[in-house]
Image (cartoon, rainbow, N blue to C red; front, side):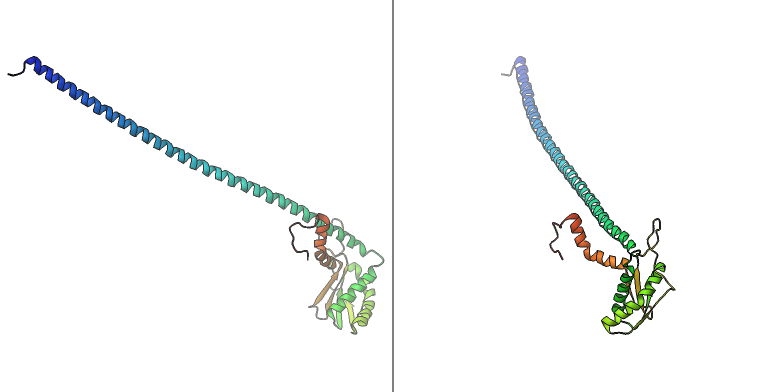
Length: 234
């Protein structure tokens, strides 16, 4: 016996409802899965961006630290340079003061004896039998008067008979004067052999330069105290 129209309609409704319900369930599963995948991807993207931000922050932090260290190093270097410049200025002031005192010596009563001693030392260094002497223009009379005594002292100390003459063709620079910026000489002599190729500078300036170099460590120690980092003192 076949189904009635009502039964057929009911059966169709049941099938439609099943299909709709099944579709809804599948739709819900898809939506839930999509939401889960979305949330997972969202978390992944968030963590990825956080990692990028951390990396960028660390990079900038390192750059800032490097910049800070460079600035500190530059400041230390600049301060050290200023300190060294100030120390050099102080040391040069000592030399300038000594040069100023040297300039006064040639005007004193002991200058002739000093010139004779400088001549004698020059003669003994060259150990020649014939020599020439140069001096400042203003010292020619003093030097002429001291040559004979220096020759006698030279012979007495070295046993060498010699002769020396004043070379007036070329003079040493003049004494320092206020406002004069050219080359100067505080006094003393330069002794040459007969050929003029070998010389001994025995000026007050050259002697000061030698003493200055020898005493520079002592000068620095006196001005600034002993170095805390220097191991050797000689």
